[in-house]
Length: 358
Ligand SMILES: [Zn+2]
Image (cartoon, rainbow, N blue to C red; front, side, top):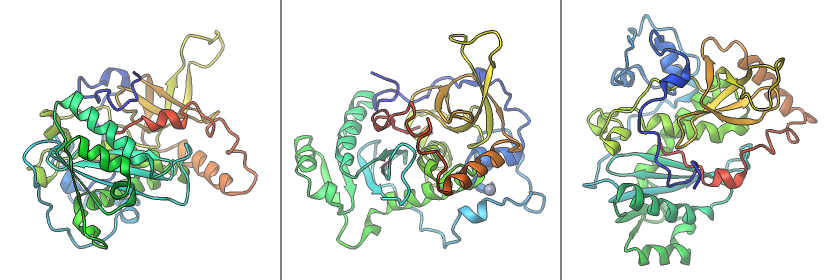
């Protein structure tokens, strides 16, 4: 079983500070603000990390926040209507998005546990993948958490309500399937709100990093990772992670999405005069591994590595380089489609099993 499967336990044990090769001490408010997806200063005060939140008048204006966040009236506070983890799951699919991810995905599936508000997202090529992923998720819950899923709430999407496979699966496992009334997706409000939050943080990561638009999937997966670690008043200022695992998550290993980093090369196949590190862009946290997902700036391959040195501030290299790549890609004829990135080591089949839970 690979580390990318649903069944692998998320990184809940010791933080991998040692591999970061960088101290998290003396990190400025602005860097933390970027690391955790531009969350508000008010929410940042709830984090158990050593940062001094500046007064509004002292803080430097953030160029990303206003562009990423919709000004809207506050939602009425959501209500938790279950008594234990995995009693009730809220499920929805999002997409299709007009631009495929570099791994060929246009959709994502979102599962929210009602009790802990922990969120799992998974990229999909088509909506039909949803039921297979839900089956795998239910099996993971039984094996890893020894809980049984009792109720699944979704909207009236055909992939759930009309699929015989789905109905058979729910019936044979004793799972109640609740659907919202036709034309009233608000009844599926928990996951609707979660999508809004996910997209808000994803936009912030996209604008902050200036990665090409076809990296939106990495933004969504990273946003999930961050949101699961943000304390919320709904959970009495605990994070979903803390609710699920009954311990405070580590924050030290978090880094600024899209920043420049150097991945150490392995001794294997390296001669005396070859570089000891490769310049990369940080693009997320692989599920179930204490490591980072990075993209090689030279050949556009995606790597998973523990041994990475980060340069989070300022964005000296990646901004101009990635912005240039992005604009070149928009222009006809730029050979990104044929580049290693698009046929990269992360194949869709591997991605299929790559859950981004925590
Ligand atoms: Zn911001």
